[in-house]
Length: 191
Ligand code: AMP
Image 1 (cartoon, rainbow, N blue to C red):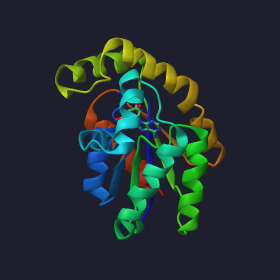
Image 2: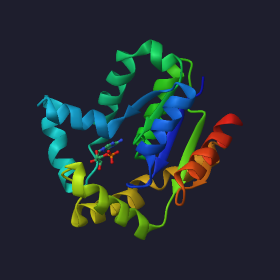
Image 3: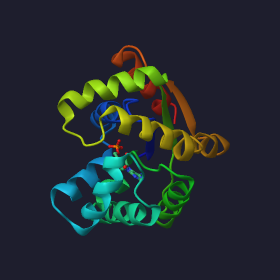
Image 4: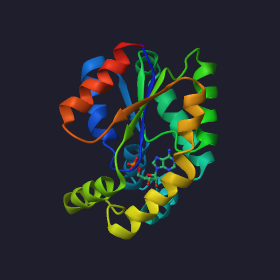
């Protein structure tokens, strides 16, 4: 089975499209945002560190993030072997390199990166709307603006990283959900 990265700015629909990919291809979902929020809810030491970074819209330091991801992979070896959808990871070049290394040690690789591209105004609109009932500490305008700045500075360069590896698949991430899903599934079916 394939290992996919679902990639895009905050609000680009990574979580939503992950859900339909899980159903269609039976992939194991690893969302680092969900994992971190679960650490915070359980008051773990990692959660205590992560809390401040998340509420300010900043990235958790790479070392900590990579350790958390490694634990997620090691906790579910069988499910991981059947294919994973990585949602919200990697977010920096250092994380992408760490992921390549972690997978290659297990005889695996990232097979494709599904890049959801959505205009900036639409991202802000979607995140503000989600903020009305998400209860998330980071779905408010100043934090959204900071997260988008962080995305452009630290995460967007990954497009080049994966394009050079021939793995980046650009998907128009605005418009009807069904159309976005079928564009993604066409790209995955071709792998
Ligand atoms: P998300 O749910 O993917 O939007 O992530 C919410 C927040 O969790 C981000 O704004 C970061 O503060 C933190 N986070 C999630 N994934 C990562 C990652 N791969 N590296 C660093 N921070 C992350």
